[in-house]
Length: 330
Image (spheres, rainbow, N blue to C red):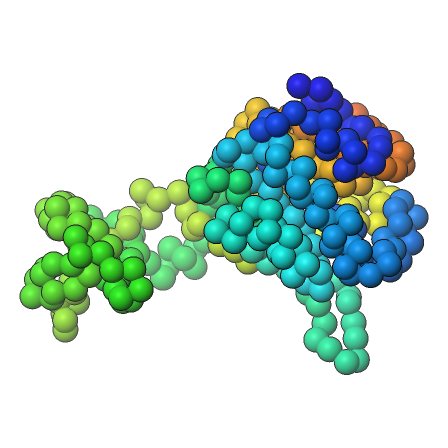
């Protein structure tokens, strides 16, 4: 595999054409946003939104689909104004049924306007090549407030929460094999009757005093924490010494989460609009391999300087970037 752990300068679409079929587990793209502005590091001016969609986004995503493995994901980081253009092309190339997630990253910022609501988030779109793709769930530790809100088992004093077992929309996805009577309630459940009996035998059911409908008990000491959902407000914007001289740089902590969720250790991660190389830095920190493409030499220079810093940081606990990552839980 060529160009692994390298930052290559050139036209991204042309470079993508040289990548072999089905070799990349994760593609992350933070493309130009069609703002009509000429940034110092790249030109974001297109003739129209149609020109942007059809002559830039479409050929790029066509190549991305080809080079993804069958368990691969593509993650595209955009602003809300252009997300629909990206979704149109993704639906055409990957298919509507390959949509996986739309993540809202509460990025903050001061996008002020007198005529509309202030934008306070970015949109992160996730599609998969095939029905089953890499996904590693991430969890946050329970806070003291979460522990205080949880119920307490009278016998064991263990803390627990409860989840529903009844499917309240049985006509949407009828499952006759999951429709049965339990404790006088003939309903469609989320688990089989055999599984329900085992939960009952293991004292994992809590019955309503009014209806007799059970909920499953989940003990906090058996869980990994609170699953991270699709609104991310806990990853902050770039802080302190992490910031490089690049207008559209994204936080390493954000990319760490994306890489951990949608790829595995030793996966090859590709970024065809690499900019300052945050994907590469994150790949190093999370034990992935990377391929970075960009048309601008200045981003590569910033990346090379920052990766030298990371190498030193692995030997130096006082390095500012590691401190930032530790504060944000990485």
